Image 1: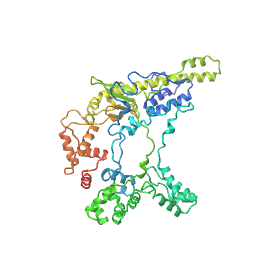
Image 2: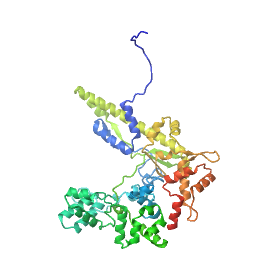
Image 3: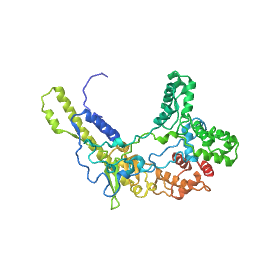
Image 4: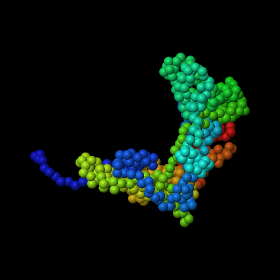
Length: 519
């Protein structure tokens, strides 16, 4: 067979990822914060883009309330949103992990450590109480200061105290020598926001060319500062410092603090053995531990937290339907300055300059179209989610339907990957709270009688509700929960109940029984 060269024409289809298409995909999955940062970069890079500062607000939104319905400034976070997590426990993990021990104490024995409550709207800065000083609260002379300048209200707002400044002030009063103050300053810099010393005394002493005994002495001095327990290197030392100040660090309490792993596992029989006390004394000692603060530095806060702004706002209408609208506060407002573009395009500049203006014009036009397409896609996907989860919005978590990306994609007419990008890092404000769009997508659990399936999230809600209502004399085991769920027409296996219970950070029935026995 002879080898010959020849020309053949073929026709085929292929997907070409142009830079414009890549940009549109990237814009779709951006959160509102990422999108704002990207727009700022484009405004600096492209001279043909400008902000649409004077554009009117979209109809139906007055910035305070939505047709007498939901006030977006007062919408509280939804259930399960930003909940404090608690670490799991294992025997090897307990003895070395301070955070795990704190989590166990807070979950079962030390409710005063981390109460796990859902923050109020004002704590997120969403309510009226989180807005700070308002213009109507100013009682000074109108028109600003006497010299005609506008009054600077920020000058009248006190700077919030932080842990570092609080400790440095006490250090200045407690030390006299320059060397001690310098060493103490470095030690304070190594204390985290929870009040724990996270550095190494040997490394700090070597860096300052100071004896290790001096660093140890200054650390013990700092451990005597306010708040009580600050400067500790682990949880046991933090509790010991607070107990010494209360004159409660006797040998029995010392043995209890030395076996926090047994306390985390609620092995009270072993604790009584080590502490050499009876059951009544061990309960009193546990009550004393509850009244301590495992994170003494958090009374000063961990810095400001930016509130989550919803991308979509939903509120009910009088005819029992729902109105879905994009949040105008997070929509980017940019325009192409066509007059400037025309004026510059008429100039007789260099070819490189003309090519630059042409590239900027194409980029600006494509960006505005991509932003418009992004907004339309988010609105369409959100509207379909609201239609699918209508009963949840009206009645609560128990009525959340099982939903997947394919269902929404087929209804909207887009690909599943597009729905996945739209629902990533985007939030919906509803009468029931603030939810990430991905919250509405849950797996399905079959009904016991073969009817409509149940959402996994609604089953978790039922499990949490059952355990929350149990009494100390009747602790529900996983098998008992399975029986009750089957009575509610939910077909679920015991191992699935155990998995859901663990995902909710709920202890087993044995641990809950021990908790209620000591509470």
